[in-house]
Structure formats: C-alpha cells, structure tokens
Picture 1 (cartoon, rainbow, N blue to C red):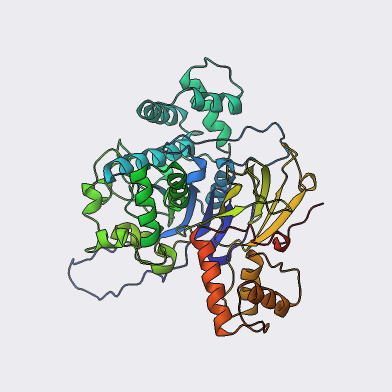
Picture 2: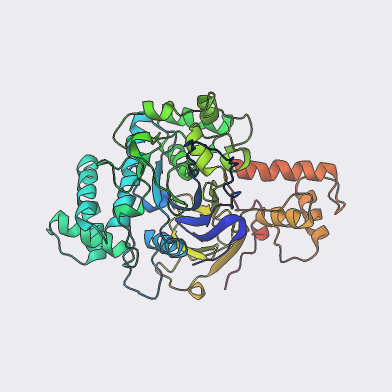
Length: 486
C-alpha cells in the first residue's frame, strides 16, 4: 500500500486510488436577535471529504463482473480489487460514520442510455461488494439481478470457483456470496446506514447512481477521434482495441465520502435511479453541457484534471471539482524489444509503478499497455522472452525504466527524461553528449546546446511518440533506453 499524500492522494494502486479532498471553509452564518417566534433553518452544505475509485481494469470488458486473480502464492499481494478495497477500509477507519455514495461512469462509445445502464450496474456491483459482510442476502440478490441482465456464463463462474474453492455446480447464491466475501475484507462491514440516503429508497436512489458517459475525464483530440471513427466504420479491430484502451480512464466507479452526519432525502436527490433513463441526468447539465462533454480540440486531448470543463453534469462537477480521484490515469504503451531491436510479442513482464507491481504479457505487437498513476514518476519494467513463468525481478533477462510524467521541457530534468524515453539513457551523465547524439540523428547542427531548432525537433519527435502512446523501441537498437541484458 502506497501512502503518498501528494495532491490529496492517500493510496494508489494498479486498479484505482483513494484520496482526501481539500478542506473547506467552516460553515458560517450571520444571525440577528428577534423578540418574536421568528427563526431560520440552516442546512449544512453537502460536501465530500474523501474519495475512492475503482478503475475499468477491475471489471470484465463491457461488463459489471468484478474480476479476480487466483494465486496460490499467498506471499504475493493479489492484483485485483482487493488492493483497492484495502484502501477503502483504511479510509473508512480514518473517517468513522462518514456516509458514502457510489457513482458509475462509462466511456463515450455507444449511446447514452446503454452506457447509463452499464455504469449503473457497475456501481451497483461495487455497492453489493461493500455491504456483503453486513447484508449478504441483499448483496447476492443484487449480483443475481446483474448476472441475469448481462448473461454471466461459464467464464464468470469458473473465475468465482477458482477464488472461492467451490466446485462446479455450486448454486449461484452460495457461489456469489463466497466470491464477494473473498474479495471484501472482513473488517469492511458496511451496511445501508453507512450510505448517504441510508437505504431509504428501495432502489437505492442517493446511494448508487449511474452517470453514463456524461462526465468524461478524457476527451480525445479531433485527430485521434477521427482516426477511431474511421476504424469503427472499417471495423479495424486493432485500432478499436487501441481506442478502448485509451478510453479506459472514463470507465470508472467513484465512491464519495461525505462529512459526518450528512444525510439526504432521496426524493430531493437530483440523480435518477440506476434503472431510469437519462432525462433526469440531462436536467442537471450545465447550459453548455453537451459542448463540454463532446468538444474535441485539434491537436491535444482534453482532460478534466487540466481544463475542468469536460463534465456535462453540473451537480457531479460541483461535488468532484477538487477531487484527487477524478484525474485521468495516464494510459500509454511501451514497446518491449530485445537487444537487436526486434519486437517481442506475448512475452511475460513485470511492471513496478507507484509502489505497485503489475504482471502480464505483451500484445501481438510487443506492447505493454500501461496505466500510470498520476503521482507515479518512474516506471520500471522487466521482461523475458524465454522464461514463461518468472517469479521475481531476478528471473527476468531484460529491464528498462520509463518516465511517465516528465518535468517541463525547459528544465534540465525534463529534457533528460524526454531524451531517456526516446532511447538516450539517463544513466549517461553528460547531457550535452546526449543532445549531440539527438542532433546528429535528426540532421541538426551538432552543438550540444538546446537551441530553438533542437527544442522544436524534440517536441515534434516526442509528441509523435505520445500521439501513438509511447513507442520506446529505438530507431537505433544500440540506443535502447536503459536496457540491460543480465
């Protein structure tokens, strides 16, 4: 568990984060004396004090099924939602009796109604997980409803059997309960009373809501969107997979924690129920809400973190404007290669980012799809084309470091980090030597100084790499970024 409090982040993991919102001014009001029975009623504003987020990686694609990792090695922390639920437990312990509310979000692919239903089911699946220890019957009933709607089949049941240890043919009610209780820490014992509406509405209005695609954290540039639109018309599966990967920051479930004593009347809550249409959501839009959620800039992606104008819903915008959890996790790709510069498809890797480890295999083009925490700076990747089941870092033959969030280009650190990501190792201490190598490779005056022409070319080359995510595979195999063959 990473306890970095930078920018409000309390805990960050491979599949989500928890954080604390900035403190707000104390509630103040002016009163005056009266000689009659006159009085005013003062209501505390509804203010979130903390947040918890589960990312798309913890769900099956286009589904509300919460995935899991079944590992026989108890020494390895599971790479599944148990990591994020441990964060929530820590948050609940730090803020006792502070109520919660769950918000599901989808990406902009598809229509609003479909995405509202899917985002609502994901939010409800998480809510069920949170109450399974106190009210297992209700939790199981909710998962059964979701399962029937999404037609969960053999694959989902085999996943649950692998984690729970229950045999094939186990009744769903028993299997669902066992699986959820394996995922949810026993100490996390939340009940309906721990949510904002306290279960007053039979369909969880105020406690659980689906926000469809109305509040994106990331909106593609016009160029990138046009490329993906063309891919959709041509049914280009490779590019559509890339689109889905890049869209992942928008697919999330967010839990907001409110000040102790906060409670709402479901009849006055602005968000519609999870099974209701999008009309109630649209009523709460900014006057330019459609423009906010759909404008594509010519050359750059828009993010809520940077621009604060991508959410269509003004109510959700007000609640989360300063939330550390509403940041677009940096998704990019890193191509792994051997010492000859050849791509390495389907090879096992281990990635360390923000204190967390992620394992997997590269795709058919040799790429690792990486979700970098917004506070993570340096990512280390180790990989091996020969050993199909390496355990620790010492079992891999190759390693490489990547800077996920380089400093400003005008600083020596920012220049050094960008050159490193392009293949000029940061371990080479002489910055001028690396600049001269870059200038030589790109037909510039070889001065070793970062003049305007060099800066423009570096921005062009690095920007091109970012536009296709980050392709670390160098043009010159000998210039591999900190690649080490042991």
